[in-house]
Length: 329
Image 1 (cartoon, helix red, strand yellow):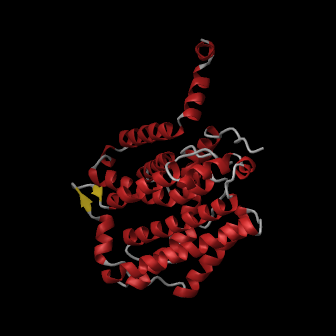
Image 2 (cartoon, rainbow, N blue to C red; image 1 turned 180 degrees about the vertical axis):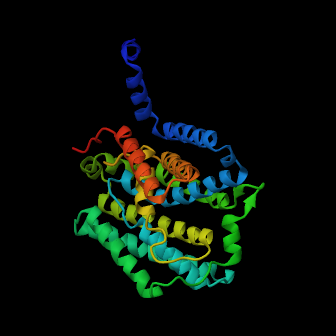
Image 3 (spheres, rainbow, N blue to C red; image 1 turned 180 degrees about the horizontal axis):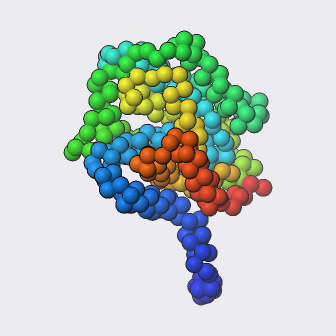
């Protein structure tokens, strides 16, 4: 009876705060619906199949980019190479394919190989050399970005294969992007990795309390390195799909996804301190960010004003979504 009496004494603001803290993913979806309703009320023409399809497609791309970031944050790490890896994978895709679909397997192998290399480098520097993950991943991100310019000489080149492009941007039932088919494969894979696999269970244990996890026999160094590898591999795959969506690629084309994926994951309820989070929450966070961006575009605001408004709104959301520090003693 005590919890009920306590709840009865809570103010409306306290109830909202408790709801947000207990259901961040659901709250992100609710806010997204409200923002979209406001957008439609301001401009009824924004409610159409093309707009809905575009929101879904961009949400999926950001969700794919957020998958690896979710894994790393749950494990108590941080990965700023997401955007650089995506951009590099996109460049590899367009340069190697050069408009030919027969080279998909080669591109896939190169992109995934590049992701594994970057992930291992992130993990080894963070774990074995014991450098701060933020500094390490930012430095490696810069190196990966410079390599893009070495490869391309700063000029865009090549195109994704037409069939590959179609597998991403073609519409099902008139508005659902065919990219959804990739989601049907990737999303269950990430859910299994986090919720059903031994790796996922050990990842949550390590993120919540690395000392206790180590004492129970978890090979924390191995798990930490693997989480960076998974993050880079998923980012590389997201970059391939992004290249198909864009058709071609240039240096740093997806660099903003390093920040956007981090915000989407945190807004979706993953604790910055590790041990708490879910991929479902990250998808909800990605939806919220895309709907917010779409609403600002519909308002026809200038780019600087849009950036300011988006930054302020996201800052407020991050403050509201702030969680208690995980137990790590």
